[in-house]
Image 1 (cartoon, rainbow, N blue to C red):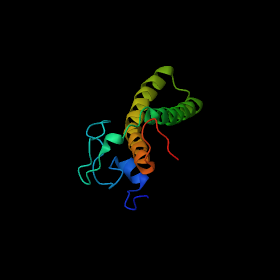
Image 2 (image 1 turned 60 degrees about the horizontal axis):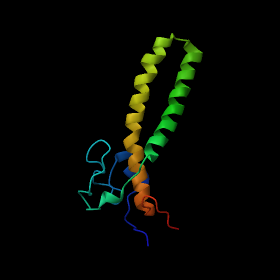
Image 3 (image 1 turned 180 degrees about the horizontal axis):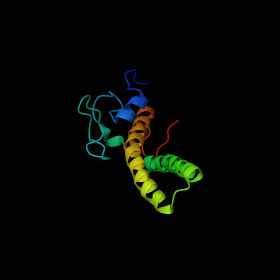
Image 4 (image 1 turned 60 degrees about the vertical axis):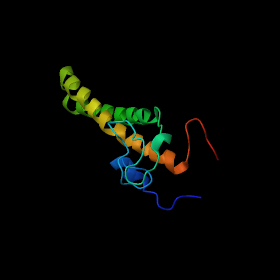
Length: 122
């Protein structure tokens, strides 16, 4: 039996909100999942995304940064130090921005499909 009053996945992921009500904050700090939703009271102790968000972020950010770096190199051929100054901080900024979003999305998927760590039920 599925819960009809579940917030959309994209909304809970992008806004880092509770996967059930979509209103309460999911994180108590940067990447630490709150113990419970302050709005609907959902116990969030089930939420353990593991390394999944980091893997997705590294793959997506890496592809984006490499594509941008190759484009800049092919069009402008700047000196090496420009690449270091440009892409190092940009890589860190993109990864730190995307990490909470992907963690929130994976927690929402965990809630929606009721999967616990190490257990896959049909």
